[in-house]
Image (cartoon, rainbow, N blue to C red; front, side, top):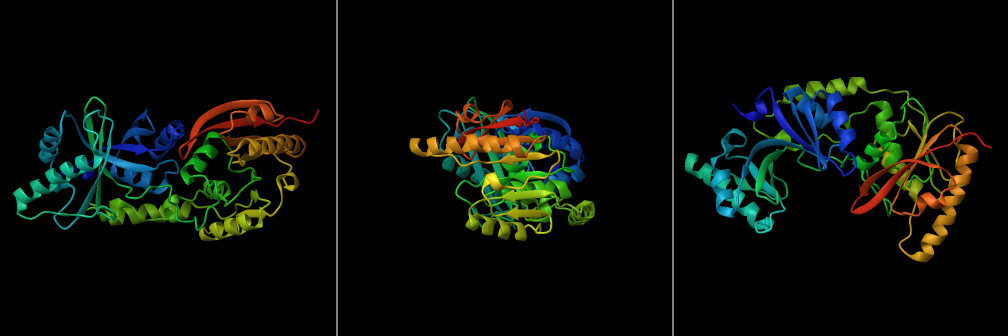
Length: 384
């Protein structure tokens, strides 16, 4: 029986640095067992229904891998021999196309293109020996994407990529701003804030709208797969379409209609136009209110809520000096307008905390793309 059809499916769910703990909690809530936090990912086991739920509902996952096998190898021949022993006929047919992605930290086996070629050779040679025909390779758009990870000591893990695409590609982003934040990172930062989705959410520098869109999806309980239902697993031979459609219908029934407490603002009319288009594509126009105003004119409801934003940062010293003045003004505005709120800022500027006239709370270390950033929390108390 194929591992994918079994009642215990071992998974490794990839995420971004700094989001491992919130991903682990999300997987537990979806029903995964034996949850173990790793580096930029979480290992767990799931039955088939939970496996499908992870793909449909996860906001923090970048990719979902089905762990097939692990073995220690010291050279390319040992890799080929090991891969050829695996029962690939249980996971794809000669009619399927395949591709192999490789990540290697081994000091000698470090030519990832060659390693992918050897892995592919082992798979198709097994098929040729069994059936006298072989599956084809399609690097850009395969039916089955195979993931090989080789550690520095030769410990090798091979897996099937059930996501197919990077799961941050929600399908709503028509255009992005200069420093647009990854959708998974935005959802993860919102989760780290412990925001109560029944309370106001404000992004005073919303840019192309990623934070407000992800917040609205959380408040509405909208599964990300309801916006983009293209997953690699749907092209696998053992994919269960009936189960998938049942879970999709359940996700649709869970969605709320009454959310109207998500607010975004930006002083750039072009960015507001882009944000509106992205929000429209996400089918959230009734749930998000946008303002074309600078941060000091932004309207903040008199309530307890959360403010999360990705303020601009300068690449040059002169720019940074001007922006730090703006950070100071932002802090003064929030002290006056946002009493009772929690505020969170993601920034690569290590001087941000010194500039902001608020006392920082917990600080999380994350990556925004390849840029190391701090995600800084503040509690805005009553005016003194």
